[in-house]
Image (cartoon, rainbow, N blue to C red):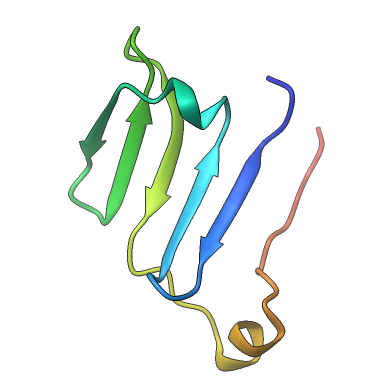
Length: 72
């Protein structure tokens, strides 16, 4: 894995997180918790989409995500 890519669609209220190349997406699976898993041809999860992703009005205006990164 080179990097994690995060795409926040403010109009669609979705958050997409990719652990691999999005072009490798072969299938999707809904979890029932407003999460859609993106899988490659081998069935490995390469990303996910959070539906109805809501943030505060301040974050929406500033276009900043509440993200914390921890390295162990």
